[in-house]
Length: 316
Image (cartoon, rainbow, N blue to C red; front, top):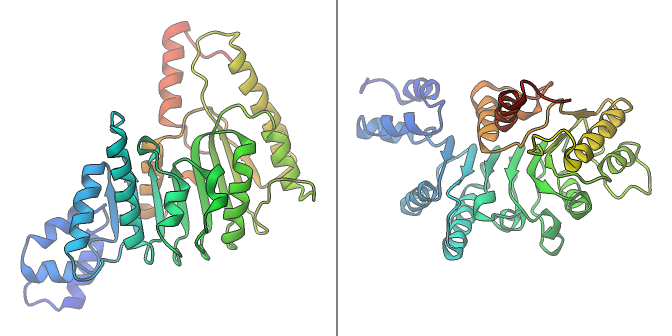
């Protein structure tokens, strides 16, 4: 293998480095030559599951003479018990990593709600994401991005946000992202928390009414809407009844618009779902969270099982 041409080694390594970085790390330990050749592709997919992993990766970036080409990046942290100072540090680490890799990213995904990461932090990390095609993030602050300069995202095709939100607070933020991503064709809204105006807002936007507050992309192909699960075992819980009513309204709207898909099951979309969908996209060239019908979320499965254990079955 040591005498094998570098071009052939690189081709072989491209079939090996299909995970999120581990295979590339192993190759770099085989020999100096393997390390140098595999460096071109071993960082193509990076999955950082905690702030400590992010810190180590950032330190590695600082030591390198050139920034590796990272096409697919997943960031998450579920260590919820943090002091405010450590949250600030975690946000700064995320910003530094994204800033370093922005020019080569094709997909960016993750759940950063635990460290209070915001869209403002994301957009301040770079002046442009020239290659980014898919953005799927759980983070906060879309209602506060009006005061910052949004970078150009000329090739963004699919945008997915998941966190509890009120419709009115996020409309302006959505409009700004649509404005700066002219190629956007897919939007997914997950974990909406009982905003009663959502069905009417979406119906008005899909009808392209001039009075609509929400502006959707001109070339929109698919809009997916998923509610958040309301955890209650009572058949008469008012919050469950309200959410159920909103879902029925959305289903009625979906019958009028081919672009709208309302998920058939409730369930919090979280980090486990995001990771599974991201891996499907980057490892299998699949549809990820854009499949039809959508995958039932991890929490929805657990909730369904809990209901069955409690009363012998789900109450519709």
